[in-house]
Image 1: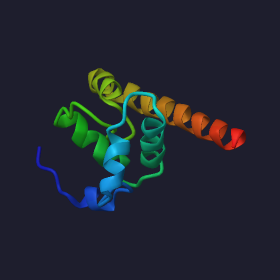
Image 2 (image 1 turned 30 degrees about the vertical axis):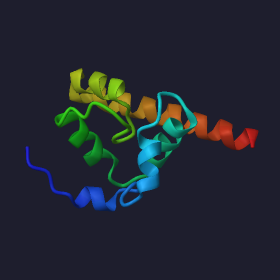
Image 3 (image 1 turned 60 degrees about the vertical axis):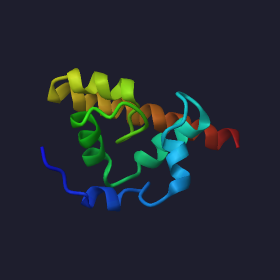
Length: 103
């Protein structure tokens, strides 16, 4: 599959060296959550996720998912994938809301 780089330059993470450490943070750390929140408001989330799944990116948050989530997503049929993406988005939104209310 051939990919255009256009989605990358439109991504919320584009061009930030500082964000590289966020997107490659340890599982379930503040940086991990921050990367997921950045993804879930990004217009490139679907293209990013599909790129990461099709190229089997082994690390980092891509398209709002970590490597384990992407592996699970790749094994699903398309109708289940949509539901799974919504479940992850709800989980991230709940975390963000809880952070906001605690702050």
